[in-house]
Length: 356
Image (cartoon, rainbow, N blue to C red):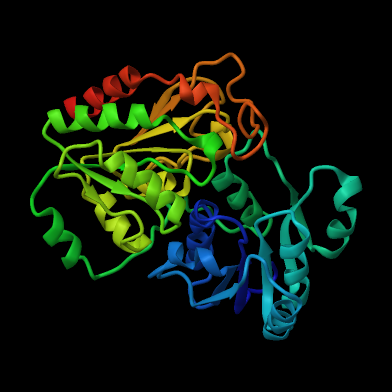
């Protein structure tokens, strides 16, 4: 850009993990424009992932299922307030918000020109969305390359100063955090597998901490697992904020979880992470390893791999990764590649981590 923008709006309207993966972009902008007003537009149910983020001046929210009145109120709030708007997705809704918000707009567009030609016309600079061969963090940073902003590769987890309650619950115990319930069934490992790994970690002298969200289905699922684990297991499902969970993860001996936003968060803390992946493409959606500062994808598409603190264990079916929603092609489907992922492979990775 010829002149430094004084007011910048970044639009990131997806899930919790996606919002976390935009924080390198935000940090890059803050370092390039330290005096700018830097705001972020997100869904109301994802703001917790940005709690205490020092790079953001203001969070602007809209319901994920916004009504006409919500859209109208947001349009009035945004109305040409910004010098620069950046969209991190190729969808229509983020693009339209950027159109109202700023005189200068950059972002991603669909890879097929016949579906995104009109966005190309209205964006001042654009980048085609790559859903296969570019990690999401790198996709965001490539947007900034359009305006010559140097990249910063570090994720910024949510932050809080209130950690006394968690400290009193855990004391000086060494512990492992298990996140057993992703949002969608097709990303789940087996209940029997979690129970076996839980008892194995306990035998190694680690206390078990179960993390999870506040949805009743998730609470019930985790409670069922907790009942079959050692008595001193600490079930925190629905009881801590993401900022508090960040502190919990930071001090953990290790973390085990599926393809979900909390696994991305655990990786960002530097804690050793065992990530269980099946249908999802690791090139695009692997956890970003702590301290990884290279403009290349950290993980390849096929195979179990370790990069820095992230140990990615992938199912071994010939179809992995299929990039689809389970074997039955819907979010409530099971995935055979995860159902057959053995606890022995995870135990071997645990031993590798503890040996270090």
